[in-house]
Image (cartoon, rainbow, N blue to C red):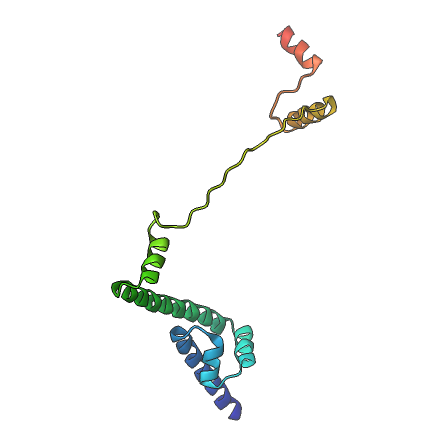
Length: 146
C-alpha cells in the first residue's frame, strides 16, 4: 500500500512538473518550487519515456510563452520610443537594417593534368561502370565486319 501511495504521489509530482515547465521552462526553478531534487527529476526523465517526451513538449511550450512575453515587452518599449528596442526590432525584422557581411577575394583554381596512368585508371573505371563503351580492337573488328 505504501508503494502505491508513493507511486501516486510521484505521478502527481510529475504532472505538477509538466504544468510548471509550461509556465517557466527552467528545470532548476521548477524543481526548487516543487521541492523536487534535480537528480530525481533527471532519474524520472531517464526512466519514463512518456514523461521525458512530455517534459520536452512542456519546455517548448514554455519557451514559446516566454518568447511571446518578451516580444510583447519589446513592442511596448517601441511604443514608448525606446531607441534600443526600435533598433533591435529593425535589425532583426527589416532587411535594410540587418547586419551585413561582405566578402571580397579571388579564387584561384589549379588544373593539374592527369598522368597517363591516371587517365588509364579512370577510363577502366568508366568502362567497368558502363558509363563509356569499351575500346577493344576485337569489338571494332566485329562492328566493322557487320
